[in-house]
Length: 283
Ligand code: CAA
Ligand code: NAD
Image (tube, rainbow, N blue to C red):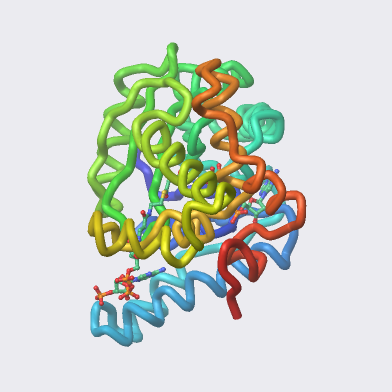
Protein backbone atom coordinates (compact mmCIF):
# COMPACT_ATOMS: atom_id res chain seq x y z
CA UNK A 1 0.00 0.00 0.00
CA UNK A 2 1.40 3.40 -0.93
CA UNK A 3 1.60 5.64 2.14
CA UNK A 4 0.12 9.05 1.35
CA UNK A 5 -1.77 9.84 4.53
CA UNK A 6 -0.15 9.50 7.95
CA UNK A 7 -2.37 9.29 11.03
CA UNK A 8 -0.85 10.57 14.27
CA UNK A 9 -2.74 9.88 17.50
CA UNK A 10 -1.72 12.28 20.30
CA UNK A 11 -0.73 15.88 19.57
CA UNK A 12 1.60 16.37 22.56
CA UNK A 13 5.30 17.09 22.24
CA UNK A 14 6.05 13.83 20.41
CA UNK A 15 2.86 13.57 18.32
CA UNK A 16 3.18 17.17 17.09
CA UNK A 17 6.84 16.56 16.19
CA UNK A 18 5.98 13.35 14.30
CA UNK A 19 3.16 15.16 12.46
CA UNK A 20 5.63 17.92 11.54
CA UNK A 21 8.29 15.63 10.07
CA UNK A 22 5.59 13.59 8.30
CA UNK A 23 4.19 16.69 6.62
CA UNK A 24 7.70 17.99 5.89
CA UNK A 25 8.45 14.85 3.83
CA UNK A 26 5.32 15.41 1.73
CA UNK A 27 2.70 13.26 3.49
CA UNK A 28 -0.81 14.41 4.30
CA UNK A 29 -1.15 14.16 8.09
CA UNK A 30 -4.18 13.75 10.34
CA UNK A 31 -3.18 14.83 13.86
CA UNK A 32 -5.61 13.56 16.48
CA UNK A 33 -6.06 14.33 20.17
CA UNK A 34 -8.95 14.07 22.62
CA UNK A 35 -9.80 17.78 22.72
CA UNK A 36 -9.59 20.75 20.34
CA UNK A 37 -7.39 22.61 22.84
CA UNK A 38 -4.75 19.83 22.67
CA UNK A 39 -4.85 19.76 18.86
CA UNK A 40 -4.40 23.55 18.83
CA UNK A 41 -1.47 23.26 21.23
CA UNK A 42 0.05 20.70 18.85
CA UNK A 43 -0.28 23.14 15.93
CA UNK A 44 1.28 25.93 18.05
CA UNK A 45 4.29 23.67 18.81
CA UNK A 46 4.70 22.87 15.10
CA UNK A 47 4.44 26.55 14.10
CA UNK A 48 7.10 27.46 16.66
CA UNK A 49 9.45 24.72 15.44
CA UNK A 50 8.93 25.56 11.74
CA UNK A 51 9.35 29.27 12.55
CA UNK A 52 12.68 28.48 14.17
CA UNK A 53 13.80 26.55 11.08
CA UNK A 54 12.66 29.36 8.76
CA UNK A 55 14.57 31.92 10.84
CA UNK A 56 17.72 29.81 10.40
CA UNK A 57 17.15 29.72 6.63
CA UNK A 58 16.44 25.95 6.61
CA UNK A 59 12.92 26.51 5.20
CA UNK A 60 11.25 29.29 3.20
CA UNK A 61 8.01 30.95 4.36
CA UNK A 62 6.30 29.23 1.43
CA UNK A 63 7.56 25.79 2.56
CA UNK A 64 6.35 26.50 6.11
CA UNK A 65 2.89 27.31 4.73
CA UNK A 66 2.83 24.16 2.62
CA UNK A 67 3.89 21.91 5.52
CA UNK A 68 1.21 23.40 7.79
CA UNK A 69 -1.34 23.07 4.98
CA UNK A 70 -0.75 19.32 4.83
CA UNK A 71 -1.74 18.80 8.50
CA UNK A 72 -5.40 18.35 9.39
CA UNK A 73 -6.54 18.41 13.04
CA UNK A 74 -8.94 15.79 14.42
CA UNK A 75 -10.67 14.91 17.68
CA UNK A 76 -12.32 11.73 16.43
CA UNK A 77 -10.32 8.51 16.28
CA UNK A 78 -12.63 7.40 13.45
CA UNK A 79 -10.76 9.88 11.20
CA UNK A 80 -7.93 7.32 11.22
CA UNK A 81 -10.03 5.40 8.65
CA UNK A 82 -8.38 7.74 6.09
CA UNK A 83 -4.82 6.87 7.16
CA UNK A 84 -2.42 4.56 5.27
CA UNK A 85 -0.09 4.28 8.30
CA UNK A 86 -0.69 5.24 11.94
CA UNK A 87 1.74 6.38 14.65
CA UNK A 88 0.31 6.43 18.17
CA UNK A 89 1.94 8.94 20.55
CA UNK A 90 -0.40 9.23 23.52
CA UNK A 91 0.36 9.03 27.24
CA UNK A 92 2.79 6.25 28.38
CA UNK A 93 0.11 4.07 30.00
CA UNK A 94 -0.46 0.48 28.93
CA UNK A 95 -4.19 0.38 29.62
CA UNK A 96 -4.87 3.60 27.69
CA UNK A 97 -2.72 2.45 24.76
CA UNK A 98 -4.44 -0.99 24.60
CA UNK A 99 -7.83 0.72 24.48
CA UNK A 100 -6.73 3.05 21.66
CA UNK A 101 -5.19 0.18 19.63
CA UNK A 102 -8.41 -1.83 19.96
CA UNK A 103 -10.32 1.13 18.48
CA UNK A 104 -7.69 1.79 15.80
CA UNK A 105 -7.99 -1.85 14.73
CA UNK A 106 -11.75 -1.36 14.29
CA UNK A 107 -11.51 1.95 12.41
CA UNK A 108 -8.41 1.56 10.20
CA UNK A 109 -8.36 -0.01 6.74
CA UNK A 110 -7.26 -3.62 6.47
CA UNK A 111 -3.50 -3.99 6.16
CA UNK A 112 -2.74 -0.54 7.59
CA UNK A 113 0.27 -0.61 9.93
CA UNK A 114 -0.45 0.56 13.48
CA UNK A 115 2.78 1.73 15.11
CA UNK A 116 3.44 2.94 18.65
CA UNK A 117 5.90 5.59 19.75
CA UNK A 118 5.93 4.01 23.21
CA UNK A 119 9.16 4.54 25.18
CA UNK A 120 9.04 1.22 26.99
CA UNK A 121 5.77 -0.75 26.80
CA UNK A 122 5.72 -4.23 25.21
CA UNK A 123 4.87 -4.07 21.49
CA UNK A 124 3.78 -7.72 21.73
CA UNK A 125 1.24 -6.73 24.39
CA UNK A 126 -0.01 -3.69 22.43
CA UNK A 127 -0.38 -5.89 19.32
CA UNK A 128 -2.49 -8.37 21.32
CA UNK A 129 -5.24 -5.74 21.60
CA UNK A 130 -5.74 -5.96 17.81
CA UNK A 131 -6.71 -8.62 15.29
CA UNK A 132 -3.71 -7.63 13.15
CA UNK A 133 -0.64 -8.27 15.37
CA UNK A 134 1.44 -8.83 12.22
CA UNK A 135 0.83 -5.15 11.35
CA UNK A 136 1.72 -3.70 14.77
CA UNK A 137 5.22 -2.34 15.43
CA UNK A 138 7.18 0.06 17.63
CA UNK A 139 8.32 3.25 15.89
CA UNK A 140 10.17 5.12 18.61
CA UNK A 141 11.13 8.70 17.72
CA UNK A 142 13.37 10.82 19.95
CA UNK A 143 12.66 14.24 21.45
CA UNK A 144 12.82 16.84 19.91
CA UNK A 145 11.57 14.93 16.86
CA UNK A 146 12.49 17.55 14.21
CA UNK A 147 16.12 17.48 15.40
CA UNK A 148 16.96 13.94 16.54
CA UNK A 149 18.02 11.46 13.86
CA UNK A 150 17.18 8.16 15.58
CA UNK A 151 14.04 6.06 15.23
CA UNK A 152 14.17 2.76 17.13
CA UNK A 153 12.10 0.10 15.37
CA UNK A 154 10.73 -2.72 17.50
CA UNK A 155 9.12 -5.89 16.20
CA UNK A 156 6.61 -7.61 18.48
CA UNK A 157 6.45 -11.40 18.58
CA UNK A 158 4.00 -11.54 15.66
CA UNK A 159 5.19 -8.51 13.64
CA UNK A 160 5.81 -9.45 10.00
CA UNK A 161 9.03 -8.77 8.11
CA UNK A 162 7.00 -6.74 5.58
CA UNK A 163 5.68 -4.47 8.35
CA UNK A 164 9.26 -3.99 9.56
CA UNK A 165 10.55 -3.09 6.08
CA UNK A 166 7.68 -0.65 5.36
CA UNK A 167 8.27 1.08 8.72
CA UNK A 168 12.03 1.34 8.12
CA UNK A 169 11.43 2.86 4.70
CA UNK A 170 8.96 5.38 6.13
CA UNK A 171 11.41 6.39 8.88
CA UNK A 172 14.05 7.01 6.19
CA UNK A 173 11.60 9.03 4.10
CA UNK A 174 11.02 11.17 7.21
CA UNK A 175 14.76 11.90 7.29
CA UNK A 176 15.53 9.54 10.17
CA UNK A 177 17.98 6.70 10.77
CA UNK A 178 16.15 3.50 11.78
CA UNK A 179 17.81 1.15 14.27
CA UNK A 180 16.22 -2.19 15.20
CA UNK A 181 15.74 -3.16 18.85
CA UNK A 182 14.17 -6.26 20.35
CA UNK A 183 10.96 -6.15 22.34
CA UNK A 184 12.19 -5.93 25.95
CA UNK A 185 11.16 -3.24 28.49
CA UNK A 186 12.60 0.14 27.40
CA UNK A 187 14.11 -1.40 24.23
CA UNK A 188 17.74 -0.20 23.79
CA UNK A 189 17.32 3.55 24.29
CA UNK A 190 15.45 3.69 27.58
CA UNK A 191 17.08 0.56 29.01
CA UNK A 192 20.22 2.69 29.10
CA UNK A 193 19.06 6.32 29.28
CA UNK A 194 16.34 6.13 31.93
CA UNK A 195 18.38 4.36 34.67
CA UNK A 196 20.99 7.12 34.19
CA UNK A 197 18.32 9.81 34.64
CA UNK A 198 16.86 7.94 37.65
CA UNK A 199 20.35 7.71 39.17
CA UNK A 200 20.78 11.47 38.71
CA UNK A 201 17.52 11.96 40.64
CA UNK A 202 18.89 9.67 43.41
CA UNK A 203 22.07 11.78 43.48
CA UNK A 204 19.91 14.87 44.05
CA UNK A 205 17.68 13.03 46.58
CA UNK A 206 20.69 11.87 48.61
CA UNK A 207 22.36 15.29 48.49
CA UNK A 208 25.37 14.25 46.40
CA UNK A 209 25.01 17.53 44.53
CA UNK A 210 22.59 20.28 43.54
CA UNK A 211 20.54 19.89 40.33
CA UNK A 212 22.76 22.47 38.63
CA UNK A 213 25.97 20.71 39.68
CA UNK A 214 24.74 17.23 38.70
CA UNK A 215 23.88 18.55 35.25
CA UNK A 216 27.13 20.51 34.98
CA UNK A 217 29.18 17.35 35.74
CA UNK A 218 27.48 15.41 32.95
CA UNK A 219 27.68 18.31 30.46
CA UNK A 220 31.25 19.40 31.07
CA UNK A 221 32.65 16.05 32.16
CA UNK A 222 30.91 13.68 29.79
CA UNK A 223 30.08 16.05 26.94
CA UNK A 224 26.32 15.42 27.12
CA UNK A 225 24.38 18.19 25.30
CA UNK A 226 22.21 18.67 28.37
CA UNK A 227 22.37 17.35 31.92
CA UNK A 228 20.18 14.37 32.94
CA UNK A 229 17.87 16.46 35.14
CA UNK A 230 17.29 19.08 32.43
CA UNK A 231 16.72 16.20 30.00
CA UNK A 232 14.18 14.64 32.39
CA UNK A 233 12.37 17.99 32.45
CA UNK A 234 12.37 18.00 28.62
CA UNK A 235 11.05 14.41 28.39
CA UNK A 236 8.40 14.95 31.11
CA UNK A 237 8.77 13.56 34.65
CA UNK A 238 5.48 11.63 34.32
CA UNK A 239 6.91 9.87 31.25
CA UNK A 240 10.24 9.19 33.04
CA UNK A 241 8.39 7.65 36.01
CA UNK A 242 6.15 5.56 33.74
CA UNK A 243 9.23 4.20 31.91
CA UNK A 244 11.02 3.34 35.18
CA UNK A 245 7.91 1.51 36.37
CA UNK A 246 7.84 -0.56 33.16
CA UNK A 247 11.57 -1.40 33.58
CA UNK A 248 11.11 -2.27 37.27
CA UNK A 249 8.05 -4.46 36.75
CA UNK A 250 9.12 -5.95 33.43
CA UNK A 251 12.71 -6.84 34.38
CA UNK A 252 11.89 -7.63 38.02
CA UNK A 253 15.11 -6.16 39.32
CA UNK A 254 15.21 -3.56 42.11
CA UNK A 255 18.08 -1.77 40.41
CA UNK A 256 15.31 -0.18 38.30
CA UNK A 257 13.22 1.12 41.24
CA UNK A 258 12.06 4.67 40.55
CA UNK A 259 13.56 7.28 42.89
CA UNK A 260 10.99 8.41 45.52
CA UNK A 261 11.82 12.03 44.68
CA UNK A 262 10.80 11.47 41.05
CA UNK A 263 7.49 10.03 42.26
CA UNK A 264 6.98 12.96 44.64
CA UNK A 265 7.53 15.52 41.87
CA UNK A 266 5.00 13.74 39.65
CA UNK A 267 2.51 13.61 42.55
CA UNK A 268 2.95 17.37 42.94
CA UNK A 269 2.24 17.93 39.24
CA UNK A 270 5.84 19.05 38.67
CA UNK A 271 6.19 17.39 35.28
CA UNK A 272 9.07 19.44 33.87
CA UNK A 273 8.92 21.88 30.95
CA UNK A 274 5.35 20.99 30.04
CA UNK A 275 3.96 22.05 33.45
CA UNK A 276 6.39 24.95 34.00
CA UNK A 277 8.21 23.26 36.89
CA UNK A 278 10.34 20.16 37.37
CA UNK A 279 13.94 20.13 38.56
CA UNK A 280 14.04 23.66 37.14
CA UNK A 281 11.38 26.30 36.58
CA UNK A 282 10.27 27.49 33.13
CA UNK A 283 8.48 30.58 31.82
N1 CAA B 1 12.39 22.26 16.31
C1 CAA B 1 13.24 22.62 15.34
N2 CAA B 1 14.55 22.86 15.55
C2 CAA B 1 14.99 22.77 16.82
C3 CAA B 1 14.16 22.40 17.89
C4 CAA B 1 12.80 22.14 17.59
N3 CAA B 1 11.93 21.77 18.53
N4 CAA B 1 14.89 22.36 19.03
C5 CAA B 1 16.15 22.68 18.69
N5 CAA B 1 16.21 22.93 17.36
C6 CAA B 1 17.41 23.24 16.56
C7 CAA B 1 17.92 24.63 16.82
O1 CAA B 1 17.29 25.59 16.00
C8 CAA B 1 19.41 24.49 16.47
O2 CAA B 1 19.56 24.51 15.07
P1 CAA B 1 21.00 24.87 14.37
O3 CAA B 1 21.89 23.69 14.60
O4 CAA B 1 20.68 25.06 12.94
O5 CAA B 1 21.49 26.10 15.05
C9 CAA B 1 19.71 23.08 16.96
O6 CAA B 1 18.46 22.38 16.98
C10 CAA B 1 20.30 23.11 18.36
O7 CAA B 1 19.41 23.82 19.22
P2 CAA B 1 19.83 25.00 20.21
O8 CAA B 1 21.04 25.70 19.66
O9 CAA B 1 18.63 25.81 20.53
O10 CAA B 1 20.13 24.29 21.56
P3 CAA B 1 21.11 23.11 21.84
O11 CAA B 1 22.35 23.19 21.03
O12 CAA B 1 21.20 23.10 23.32
O13 CAA B 1 20.29 21.83 21.38
C11 CAA B 1 18.91 20.02 21.85
C12 CAA B 1 19.02 21.51 21.88
C13 CAA B 1 18.89 19.53 20.42
C14 CAA B 1 17.59 19.66 22.55
C15 CAA B 1 20.15 19.41 22.61
O14 CAA B 1 20.25 20.00 23.88
C16 CAA B 1 20.08 17.93 22.76
O15 CAA B 1 20.42 17.18 21.84
N6 CAA B 1 19.64 17.47 23.95
C17 CAA B 1 19.50 16.05 24.23
C18 CAA B 1 18.23 15.55 23.60
C19 CAA B 1 18.02 14.09 23.85
O16 CAA B 1 18.79 13.39 24.49
N7 CAA B 1 16.88 13.57 23.37
C20 CAA B 1 16.48 12.24 23.60
C21 CAA B 1 15.52 12.23 24.76
S1 CAA B 1 15.03 10.61 25.18
C22 CAA B 1 13.83 10.22 24.09
O17 CAA B 1 13.43 11.02 23.30
C23 CAA B 1 13.25 8.86 24.18
C24 CAA B 1 12.25 8.60 25.22
O18 CAA B 1 11.49 7.63 25.03
C25 CAA B 1 12.14 9.36 26.48
P1 NAD C 1 2.53 14.47 26.10
O1 NAD C 1 2.01 14.44 27.48
O2 NAD C 1 3.27 15.67 25.62
O3 NAD C 1 1.34 14.22 25.06
C1 NAD C 1 0.45 13.16 25.11
C2 NAD C 1 -0.79 13.57 24.34
O4 NAD C 1 -1.63 12.43 24.16
C3 NAD C 1 -1.63 14.63 25.07
O5 NAD C 1 -1.86 15.74 24.20
C4 NAD C 1 -2.91 13.89 25.40
O6 NAD C 1 -4.06 14.72 25.39
C5 NAD C 1 -2.96 12.87 24.29
N1 NAD C 1 -3.83 11.73 24.55
C6 NAD C 1 -3.99 11.05 25.71
N2 NAD C 1 -4.90 10.06 25.54
C7 NAD C 1 -5.30 10.13 24.24
C8 NAD C 1 -6.22 9.38 23.47
N3 NAD C 1 -6.91 8.37 24.00
N4 NAD C 1 -6.39 9.71 22.15
C9 NAD C 1 -5.69 10.75 21.61
N5 NAD C 1 -4.80 11.50 22.32
C10 NAD C 1 -4.62 11.19 23.61
O7 NAD C 1 3.42 13.16 25.94
P2 NAD C 1 4.65 12.92 24.94
O8 NAD C 1 5.88 13.34 25.61
O9 NAD C 1 4.32 13.45 23.60
O10 NAD C 1 4.67 11.32 24.91
C11 NAD C 1 3.79 10.58 24.09
C12 NAD C 1 4.34 9.18 23.89
O11 NAD C 1 5.64 9.24 23.30
C13 NAD C 1 4.50 8.35 25.18
O12 NAD C 1 4.24 7.00 24.90
C14 NAD C 1 5.98 8.57 25.51
O13 NAD C 1 6.50 7.54 26.31
C15 NAD C 1 6.57 8.56 24.12
N6 NAD C 1 7.86 9.25 23.99
C16 NAD C 1 8.10 10.38 24.70
C17 NAD C 1 9.31 11.02 24.55
C18 NAD C 1 9.61 12.29 25.29
O14 NAD C 1 10.78 12.70 25.33
N7 NAD C 1 8.64 12.96 25.88
C19 NAD C 1 10.27 10.52 23.66
C20 NAD C 1 9.98 9.37 22.93
C21 NAD C 1 8.76 8.73 23.12
